[in-house]
Length: 249
Image (cartoon, rainbow, N blue to C red; front, side, top):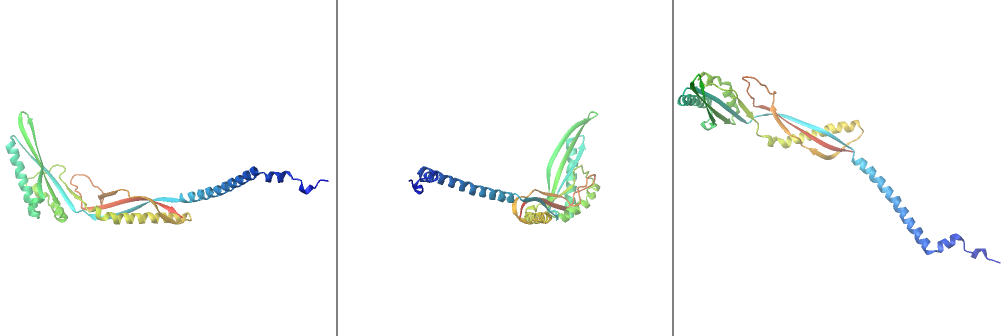
């Protein structure tokens, strides 16, 4: 009579085989690795999705400034049948211009010649010489510069014929002094826009992911006016636009 309890079954034989046990162990390890990897991959995708939540906005800051440099290039000329007479006419105008600025209160070194040109042609066989000269005023005294512009008619009364392009130009040179404050203000303005966007979408604004300063522009405060007799003004408007990418939480 056979003892059934001692008869090995197929399952018992399978587990007694060392090769089968190694194969089962390896399979279990691989399965556990796949499960853990899948979990980590899924969690990583969720975190990556969260990281993509951001908003890009622009911030603006503008402020009015007063120019600190005045430059006036005065062009004038004289024409005569010989070069000496034409040059003498220009010399008289140059002296009148120097006297004009001296009486207003400018030092002598504020005005200097910056160019001269001689043109020769004939008019019905008569030789004609035109001597054209430029003198430039450069000053940081904006009040005196404005006074000179208002009184330039006195130059015309003295016989100086001002050519086209003889106008005062004002420049603001202190941009580097206001840059940090303006960038900070523009960034603050950008965050305010981002917070409004986040509020509407049920989120909150996080840290700055990326920012671009943009460029600064300096224009006339009251717009650029063209036409005859129109001069620049010392009142300017500085403007900067920043682009900021904020994360959303």
